[in-house]
Length: 154
Image (cartoon, rainbow, N blue to C red; front, side, top):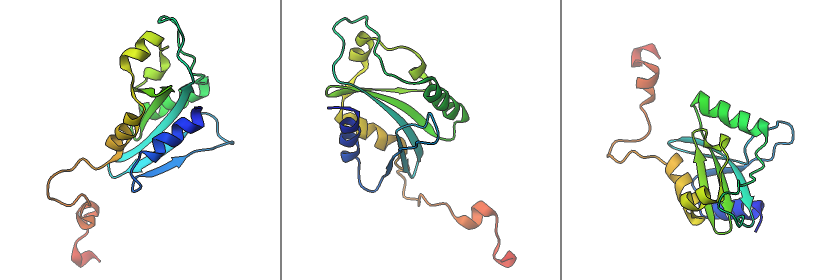
């Protein structure tokens, strides 16, 4: 498997009603590989795939995140308006890095300790962008209340 196949397998596991976009931007450097959107917000994910984990536990994984990718991820994380993550896949597993964790090197030992089955990545993405409102109220806000419009003003 390669990175493309890894991303494709994650996308196949997502419900069809969730918006997913495999970004291919040749004009702007640093933009993550994928964009996801749902009722609870948006998520950008940069994917990296390692075909085989190193032999030694102390070996740092080569994720090939470029400085401009790290800058982009850090900037979006700081803005706070969109969720961002780096998903590192290896074989049939993955590690999900959030909140600036992508800036720190990851060893094989740390990877093995934190990894989840590859199929769980789709569940995690879904959890990040699906509506979490479980009460009986509508998830759609009353536009009149949001815009403070009264019937007499229209």
